[in-house]
Image (cartoon, rainbow, N blue to C red; front, side):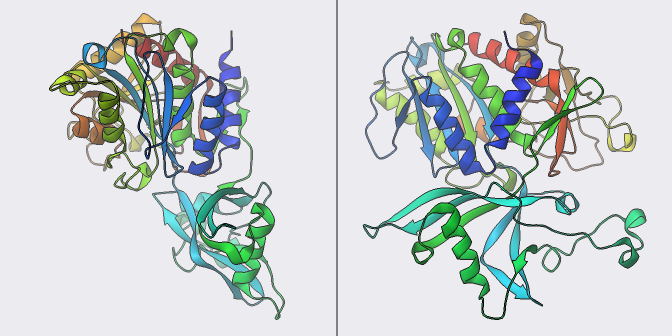
Length: 436
């Protein structure tokens, strides 16, 4: 029986091995292989069997995993846990390398809404994928991961920024975010120097490299902290903690033996609005659902019957109360770290929860003796959103938005509670078991 700390150590190892959305999916694929899951290709015809274990990947960074139920889907519906594989941060531009006064810098673009100041004075590096021309003349791709500190964004000394402690660190997004990489001699050209680095790390000839998707990540490993190690910290807790919990819940043998069809849908591009071919606002999940219907010979209104019996748990992290900043919270709805999973509610439907879906999640918590909390944002502050309202609207299925409370959401170094993660896995397992 794994302890809560064992489960979180497994999470930290998962995150440390997954420095980009492309690595997240590759890591998940390796785990699924050990549990006898079969990969389905969208270009091929699908043949599904009751109890079969399958997954589909779109564009390397979104993945949908499902276990075909023992009963026809129109009788038992889908039980879906949704989350996202991406995190806010910095991405490398196409013509990134340039030299200023002998220092080689890489220009970056901002992905989503990171807290930019947290990227300063960190041991940064690069991970992602490279697209290249292979020996047959076709476009291929491979993952690349620099596993050592490669880049840095040094802060300006306080003697040159006297107001930083009063006004906060403000970085001009275009001029002050390029990352320092190296020194160059006058004979070295910036862009060839950079592509040569990519060649050394990936094994792909620099002349064959055509394009890249490269994310900046923090090389510091995840860790426990606190007097009793009751907290943990890492990058990308939003939302790899939810991806990890969903995967651990689904891969329990007692869960996978189920009459209903169980699914984990883990999307890229949530942090930038989800509107893409592989995002939650794209066709990926509807396509997979429809193809399951076709492969299982559903007729007429069967798919609509199945969706009407379905339920989705949209899992994304929640804003934990930080006592240093009480005015940032609705004090009647503050949620605490290590006090249980959170149901997120918003009257404008920025979260998909409503009274029935909230009650169904509460019932799951009661069944496994896990406490839960309810969160509502301050009315005078803009509220974030999740994939919940998007997927619920696309499929027409009842959905609840939940998450584990965390501190410093969208920082390069986030924190959360050990016992909340273990509790979320436990509740997710019950959610899937209740599918029969």
